[in-house]
Length: 260
Image (cartoon, rainbow, N blue to C red; front, side):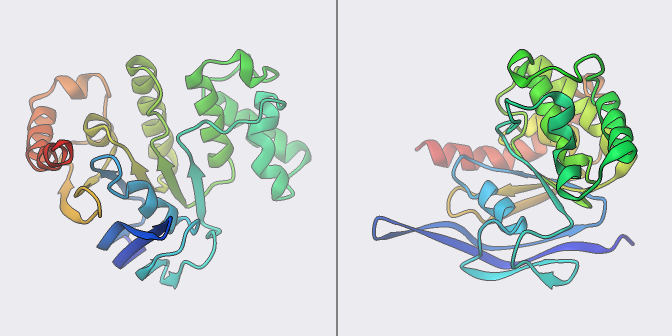
């Protein structure tokens, strides 16, 4: 049985804006196992990113507990890497220097840095663009740079906040395939926030459906699709359609309620 990496117990978060309280998340409880890929889905404003930020130690809960490896999260945990929706690459650094940034912070230099950066560039399909600056890259390529900058420091837990949300469908599918290949090789524990149900089914082992704000856990669905997954053929299968229908029946209620 894989060990328990993340424990969320009765977690709530209320923001204070202009003298009023805005509840974002209410009494969320969830266990995430080592090497598991978990997706959080739900309507806009339901607290998906808030939960991710609490796991990453970027904001503190108002109530409840957030534990990583049995210890309360009080700061940014050393085990965690974070990939944001915006690619966050530095425009004045080349592809090589952007990817190397995390290694520089950790004091990894010389031949070891060069080896690891070279391997990351190869895995991300960025060979030939080592000395390119972000302004000359497509959105998908910049997001690959941001992803590899995080993965190169080998985080045990990877938090991803709608990293492909701004990309076109073709680019997104290519990056799904690359992310799955990288995850199959390293098997980090991944918590992935998305508003795209198809994306969640393609990538995840389990999907956590949240209610509209304040976000509560409405359903936890195990994705019963074999791995490795072909991101194109998968969507043509009856099994994929069945998974989508089962989750949408629950998730669609929240979208409908959100629109009223």
